[in-house]
Length: 307
Image (cartoon, rainbow, N blue to C red; front, side, top):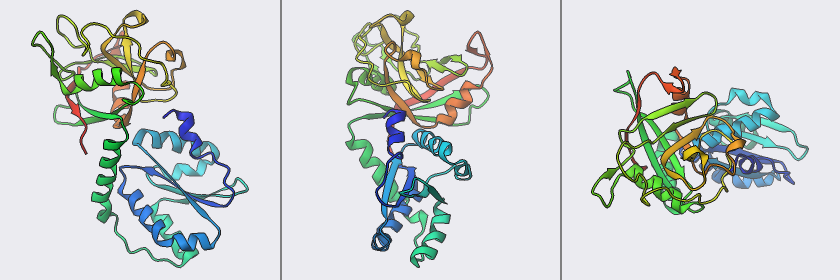
């Protein structure tokens, strides 16, 4: 989903005052909040109000929170999921806050005391996430990135591959994450490969598989599938091409650190970071020489992401 489409989920002219709940799909507090809403829905309706639930992944939550900050700087006090507020018909925003503030609000406004416990919603949250990942048509992979000097630390990055829109490109990346044996009997995998380039404030680059011969699922280079996914935010995943020449995709990839409009129509974006962008940020801030990281950064392990 593009940044603009995400913002449109919040930028709605509601016809009645609306209770908006913005949260991460993997957040038990959001599941808890949804349960509360279910219990007081009749009370909300009695006040001629509606509810609007917006769920997203970790990185997209940051995008939407920043969008809310542009409207009201008081959102700075609420960095975590979920964020609850009332969008009034007049256009004004009345911030309620986090789950804790919401529990106080419903006592005052609806005389409802919440006795539920967030920890009781952990398994339900996992099931919701698992069901979504298995049914939405995309594929999900993860990296465990090792940074020299942090050998005992797990730096997990989860990536969503837009398989519905770019099946050719996504399948190549998916198989390189899982690892597979090519016709020559060589195992191709991102495991052990380096994050070898850091372009400060632009992107990081990796995936240079050190073997002789073809390095993609399709043998040699493969075509530019389409340019439908825009580089309009941080955390966008795309294929590196040789000299930016058309149809020279292979195995190397980049992850954006900011919007990069100049990449649109030139490089093929096909996925995004949905969890662990803080790891990407940490990498981007590391010391470099001629864009090469001073410390070795490698993909210690990779594969399909399973909840």
